Structure formats: structure tokens, C-alpha cells
Image 1 (tube, rainbow, N blue to C red):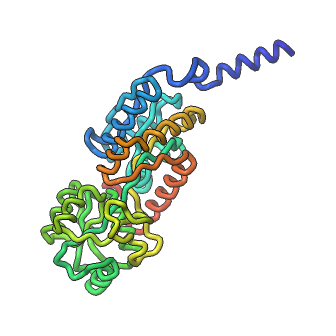
Image 2 (image 1 turned 180 degrees about the horizontal axis):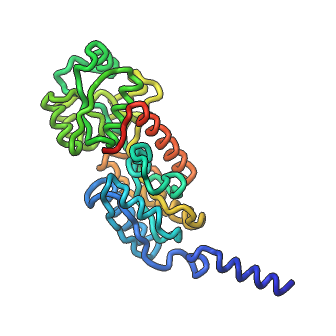
Image 3 (image 1 turned 30 degrees about the vertical axis):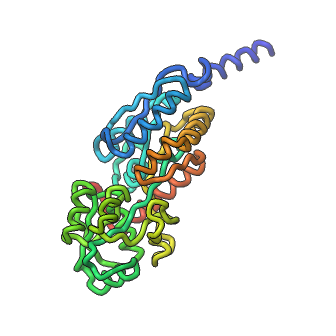
Length: 322
């Protein structure tokens, strides 16, 4: 019996996650993959959180930008990494939501190959239109579109972008006919809304904020379930005429599936404290969002909901990758 117990103990030690078998986690630098270029929202958030995690964990957080193929390059690298707590990814609503609906040949599964740690921040999209249009509310804009089917168009940051999917969800729920004009980014799309070449844009709030304040575009509503503290006078699309409408831009931390629960909980607890620190809260507000720091289970439920929602939109609108 003593021999059997010794063998069992040795086997358990071999099977234990490396970080716990060799000592307290972490014992070496942690790689934080960003599936987008330096300077975008995911990158800025990863670096801000990474600096704080370095202080909290006592090991460097090394940001690794793996942009390309709409976020697939970095996401695949993270999915195939060892689940030992030393590779994480700062995912977003595109890389860990829309891409599951847009691409039919992903070499990984968003829900199966990742474990959610925590959502770092969330931000609304905003519906803006050219101010010369005779519509001052969501209801009036829907009536305008229904009165002239096919006459108007909307801009997005490109095929498969968050703005594209959000507008297609709006089209479906409102029952309107408005053509899609894809651009290479939000800035040229907003420029053409201002110029009157397209009627509508439904993208992230921060790029549109300056134009809203200057009156160059008319904001009708935000896309979140609750109003945004940044534009508290703007109604939500749900309260303005389309009950149940909600889309959210977000950034969040993931690890490869199989990462030890103890590591996931440790990282979540640290990040939940970090996002409430005044300087990080200020950074998040500057990006147009609000801090979250929810539990792994809560974050995983959000991801599942997003994947299901966007798959439905992609099927209804026949959206596929170029």
C-alpha cells in the first residue's frame, strides 16, 4: 500500500501543471499576444494592463504583436500555445466573436480552444448620420429608410468589421434596405458620412466623438443595452425603437484551453483590481469605454452570446470573408 501511494503521488506530481509543480506562479516572463498592430485599442489596453500585471506578479509581461488576417494570425498562435499560464492573448469582439462567424476555415475554435479570464473593458458603438438628413431620432431614420428602400447607403471600416456586422443587425431588426459601402477603416467611412456620400455609420464611439461634438455628424443612439456615461443624453437603440438590440465593442484576456483554474483565477483577480485603479480607469475612458473585470464564467457567457449572434447575422446577410 505504501508503494502504491508513492506511485500515485509521483504520478500526480508529473501530471500537475508545470507552474504549480515547480513553485508558485509565475516563475518566468509571460507572453501577452495582441492580434493587431501596435497602437490600436487592443495593443494600448494590453500594454497598460501588462505594466500593472508586471508589478503585481513580479515577472515581466512581454507584449507580442501578431497582426494579420483580421486577427487570425495572433489568435491561432495563442490557441496552439502550451496551456501553462505563460501565453495569454488580449482578444477583442472581432478576434473572439465576429471572426468565428466570418471565416469558415479557422484552424481553431473560439469557444473550445480558449478559456476566458476576464473582460477588461467594454464600449458602445454609435449610430451617426449625415446631419442634412431629415431624421432626428432612430424611429425617424427607420421611417426615412423604409420610405425610400435602396436609396441610401452606410459606410463601415471594411467587410467583416464590427461596424459592418452592427449595421447588418440593424438592417435585419429594423426591416430596412440600405446598401453597404466598405472602406479601409473607420476614418474614411466617417469622412464620407460628413460629406454626404453615405448616410450612416455604426462604429466605435471614440473615432466619432469629435465629429459629434462639432456637429459634423448627427448621433442618434448608442448600441449598448444601457446609455453611455460619455454621451448620457443619447438613447440606446433598444429604447429608441428596436427592443433587444445590443452590440458591444470589448477587449478581454484569454488563455489557451487547459490552463490551470488556479492560474485563471489568479490572473482574473489581479486584472479586476487593476482596471479599477484611477490611471487605468482614465485610460479606458479615453478609449471610450468602461472597466469591467468580470468572472471567467461571466466573460465566457458573453463570448458565447457574441459568437451565436454574429453567426446568425452572417448567415442572414450572407457575409463571408473576402
